[in-house]
Image (cartoon, rainbow, N blue to C red):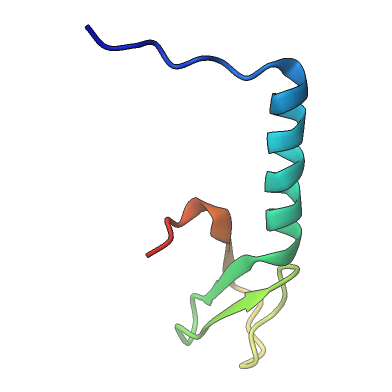
Length: 65
């Protein structure tokens, strides 16, 4: 029989969400759909090629390793 993982308390959940917000503010993977250039930025921004067709993904979504 497997153990049921415990749930976050409201305070723990708030802290976890603050950490995610901080990670989102400082670690955004940007990918230009026009030239395929990729970079990390603190905010979504246009590509160095001038294109504004940029996909922005929060880096916390990628596992370490």
